Length: 157
Image 1 (cartoon, rainbow, N blue to C red):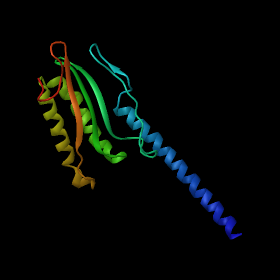
Image 2 (cartoon, one colour):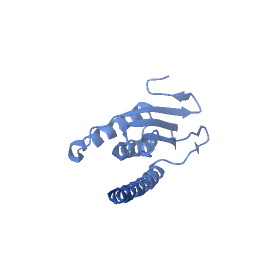
Image 3 (cartoon, one colour):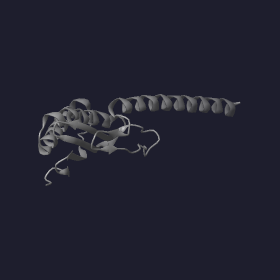
Image 4 (cartoon, helix red, strand yellow):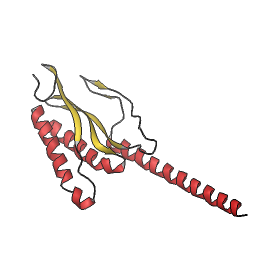
């Protein structure tokens, strides 16, 4: 009798846990779709393609970021990773992507674009003590592709 009750309770807990995980996966997928445009991305100069495969089954969203922007200064490409995984890293991803999308049209130089990205991460980290989250950093590759010089990175030719 006791074993039967424990089995039912264990099964109920497992079903509840699986339903909660499914709900979180759906939320994470929706968040990822809202900040990351679906691949492939393309403009007149560049085709960007790839696949997103989460390392951990329960962490479908995190700090992986990418974008391609056609600007008056050429095609700007961002491929990066915000430190951390799961929902805590999403704030840093929002900050970096929003800054990139705006600054890609405003900044004539690639160095100016990278400075704007860095400033957005610093501003985002200023709120870390209020939220109880650790400060995050972003590792990124930022490229400028134009008809005249091809692809350049900050500090490049």
